[in-house]
Image (spheres, helix red, strand yellow):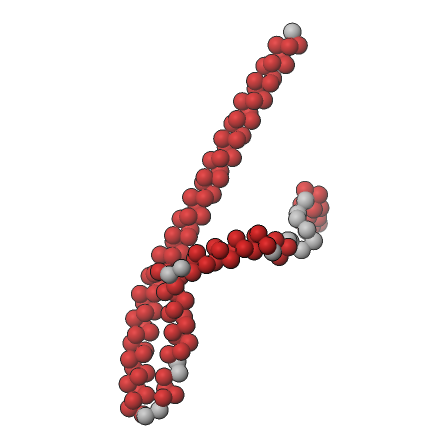
Length: 143
């Protein structure tokens, strides 16, 4: 009798473990899809921004160059310098290799400088969360 119950419980436990593994795999796939969509939105936003900023930068360059020639003062061209940095950054983000370089640097940090990723006072524990929850519930009960 005990063997039958034990076998049934083992089968049930095995089924639960398979279900939990399937759920975990689904969650990981979902998180990855969400991350990919967010990254695609970020790149698309950068490309759209670049269209407007590129137009502004081009017109500014033409107007400032004309102003520098007309006034015979090259200092009028100074605003082009910071604008060119902003334009270059967004171009690299939208069409260049900035994301690959960022990913490479992030992988380097994970591999060689993992101490930079540690949380202050260490990772959160269940006990820490319970202390905070109890203190907050006491705070709201006192009011």
